[in-house]
Amino acid sequence: MPTQMEWARQGRITEAMAYVAEVEGVSPEEIREKVAAGVVVIPANPNHRTLTRFTGIGKGLSVKVNANLGTSYDYVNLEEELEKLRLAVEAGADTVMDLSTGGDLPAIRRAILDHCPVPLGTVPIYEAEFEAARKRGSFFDMTVDDLFETIERHGREGVDFITVHCGVTRHALERYVRTERVTGIVSRGGGLIAAWMLHNDAENPLYQYYDRLLEIARAYDMTLSLGDGLRPGCLADDLDRPQVEELIILGELVERARRAGVQTMVEGPGHVPLNEIATNVQLEKKLCREAPFYVLGMLPVDTAAGFDHIAGAIGGAVAGMYGVDMLCYLTPAEHLALPTPSQVYEGVVAFKIAAHVADVARGHVRAIERNRRMSEARYRLDWETQFQLALYPDVARRIFQARGSQTRACSMCGPFCPMNLVEHVVRRKRAALEEHPVAMAMPTPC
Image 1 (cartoon, rainbow, N blue to C red):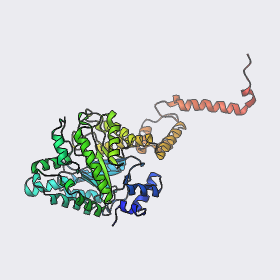
Image 2 (image 1 turned 60 degrees about the vertical axis):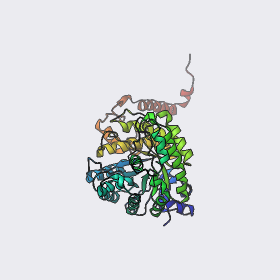
Image 3 (image 1 turned 120 degrees about the vertical axis):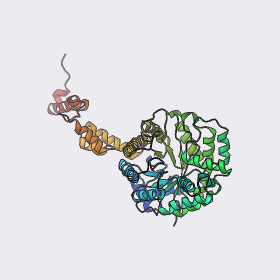
Image 4 (image 1 turned 180 degrees about the horizontal axis):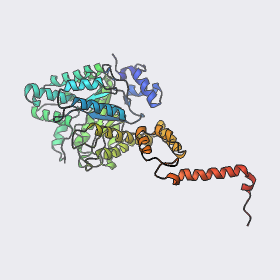
């Protein structure tokens, strides 16, 4: 079966393209053209039977938000992960990733797939290294076939997009070794493949056998999310030589994927000072020929532990304004612990707001119109319409009702609400003018 990209190049508008066009408020033909060009991706593996909400990511579309879920070495609780999934989707996550590294990984993934209405992503090397350690005693004994068989299994089961750290090449690693970094390699998948390469004195199989990867991705229409294994893990490491070299390689791999009819997006940092966000986005868009850009955060400070979801949302809004297409959320637990379900919800909320901020800054027509209608309803003290237009209506309504007002205004200003007060005076003036138009028009005698 053709991929979304191949259908688009044949001139066919698929169900997924039509769905995305409706959500975005653009023509299906515009979506088709952008998918054909590779500047928009729609992760949609036909084997993902519970996928009901197609997501378009890329040029000219609204900024999307991804939520990471998954078990860890220390905490394995499938029911909790399913609750995280439910809350993430309820809060508005456009995609979800299962990053599980503990427990029965295939069973966890299948359970999440069975309950996931949005595109699901994974990082196959987590499972490949887990299985190699279990079967052979060491992750370093993972074979090339182990890795590619795992990737194919994910596609066969219905995973919509996979993170693959193809740009961590031997040459890039040599440059990394010669570079003094504060935090080294912080990408878990990138670190795993780098350690395997150094231990086995081998090239990255995802790069060396990239054509094999493309064949698997094309067979299941899995979107490749080209991971940034050498991304900076702190502000001091941003835009160093290993990061930029990897990005150059990823740009080349984007072009190869497009020629093969495989949808591709590029992952980015990470920890980035606010004043360097625009540079990061411009580099990716230029080097990767406008491939959709998917970033972690961005996090403009290293010191907001416990509140990284807030700091990251600030950076994410700026990144979205400059052209980032999807934000990977952060939670209050980032850098500290595996997040709880409530922290997952908090993270999605923070980043959905950041994405909306970016949409307004980018001139997204529907976002701007929604904000104007909210302002008009606010001026009219039309609370019901305000609740309907709020990003999170139930929360807004609950706060308003918790401290009810004796007037039409909220309990903050009450009878002193400036909009209510001024509007009342204006109405009286207008009524007087309508009743005595001539007298109101005559000048006052000296």
